Amino acid sequence: MKIREMTAASGELPALEAINEEAIPEMERCALADMLATGAKVFCIDVEGEPAGYMAVRCWRNFLYLAFFAVRADLRSAGIGGEAVRELIRRYPDRQVVVEYEAPDVCSGNRDERLRRKGFYLRNGFYETGWRTCYDGTEFEIGCSVPDFDAEGFKAFADYLSGIVSDHIPNPYYGSGTAPEDTLRMPDSIAAVLGGRKGKTDGLGKSGAQVLLFEDYVLKIRPAGGWDTADVQILRWLAGKAPVPQVAAHEVMDGRDWLLMTRIRGKELCKPEIMNQPVLLLDCMAEALHTLWSIPVDDCPFEKSVADNLAHAETAILDGRFDPSDCEPETFGPGGFENPKALLDWLKSHRPGEDRVVTHGDFCLPNLFTDGKKFTGFIDVGSAGAGDRWMDLALGWRSLKHNSDGHYGKVYPDINPDDLFRAAGVPKDEEKLRYYILLDELN
Image 1 (tube, rainbow, N blue to C red):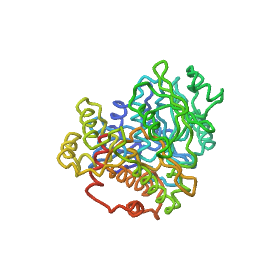
Image 2 (cartoon, rainbow, N blue to C red; image 1 turned 135 degrees about the vertical axis):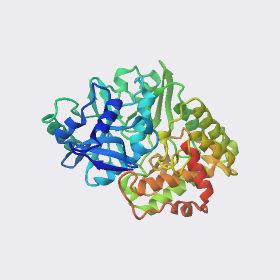
Image 3 (cartoon, helix red, strand yellow; image 1 turned 90 degrees about the vertical axis):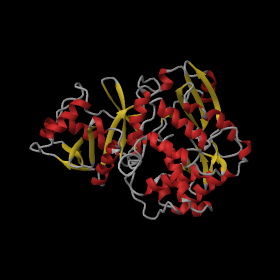
Image 4 (tube, helix red, strand yellow; image 1 turned 90 degrees about the horizontal axis):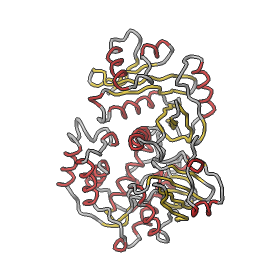
């Protein structure tokens, strides 16, 4: 896959216009020829010499604004889009690449689809900024290829854009224009703790819940009965065993699950100031692992074995709910597995012996905190349970790799993901490492 800049005379333009017409609703669509005429750049996504999609961007000062992006219908969910977006970020290392995606708020009717779209961008080099914009009554979140989004500069870009085009002009503002504590009646038990304080919309993480940050608390609001509501019982069980948020109040009301937790102090391990300290980073990861491993696994009431993960994956595949766009580009296609069922069959026939411990289940840098001296706690423990210690080791290794090798835009040459095994005191096992990364692809 490669991306090539087009001109008005490029022979591929008619094929790209056909992709544009198929993928973008008419009311939102802009002809690529018109984009070029108003100074935009149009890139052809080329796969084996054939147009597979396009990206239309606008460049101004330190910004590269991804205005339109589409992949040919027969090639979607093959990893092409993610590879193209990452290549765009690599091509413009000195610019802030900015994208917008529909906000997956609790009340949105197509929340699952919005979550998948948001997850796609967050996996492929973008960070949440906490900023939003609104078009025709629909809120969009703004993502950026660097953690330190230049909001004031982007406002200036919007002013510049208004002099070129007449519609689809960003109007950025911080937080949600429909903050849940304003539009939804808060349960009395939570209101009693918060005492009328206003929260700030969180701009971090990949959770589909609406998250509000207070000085000492975090409030999550999500649909009741969803897969992500298991964290309430897990948090209560882990209390006193590991540094996790304390449940200050929890209530289900009007079809929504309200969870108020204490805040973990410190910063996520993915922050640049922590990534620039490899010794501290690895020490914190090792301490986090050993904290979990020190909990008697026989006492854990939550099961996260290979069998459970395989059963969950098989159900999602058979029900048509599995989304391969969440996977690494090399997992499926040439050199990888033919399809998700083929991967599932391989995982079933290559099950390793399990070294059971209490696992986090989503052991990645944004879910681990430090005060700059030591490990201070976990967040997002909804997938925790009894399983193989290599589940966390594999996900931790992959998170280190992606956060240090330029996958998210910045390279940290002093970080070697293999040093995690040395820090944790566990010899590297290539077979288990590969197995649990592939198992996670289906869960």
